[in-house]
Length: 186
Image 1 (cartoon, rainbow, N blue to C red):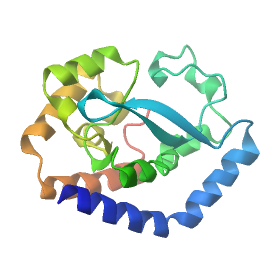
Image 2: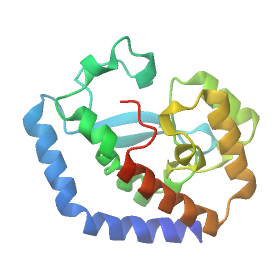
Image 3: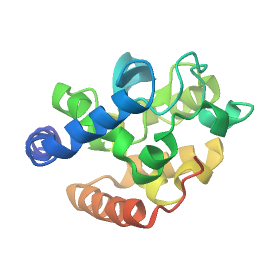
């Protein structure tokens, strides 16, 4: 049932958000050099690597590491990168990953391929069995501000309590967080 819900909602969102998605793509194209979409290697269900699209918010040649590991993340952002991240508009292309089945609307956020500590903790606690999500329990309970052990603890809570109604609650609370721009570092 979750896959049917994800696919249907992603298809509807793709149609409804088509014009804003095209506009964001044009803004990315005209404000910085490089591709409009950045394809990031991410860890999916059962630790399988997949390509996750995002609107590019960083300058080309920025290392593929978690933002907090960059010496000065602000210097790596494109002219509209900060706005795209704070508004979560950089995430719109991930609807493709949901349609493809690599992601769900709700689940643990997919780790970067090189976040060994996060991947190991999730695997240890069985979280790697979940399809990663556009949003998740950890995102509405701290987002970028959480240390890795706390994120995994929240991912485990989601694993144990997951249900359709919890997913609806997380989607609704994510919408509120995005509107308020809560918990975003860059």
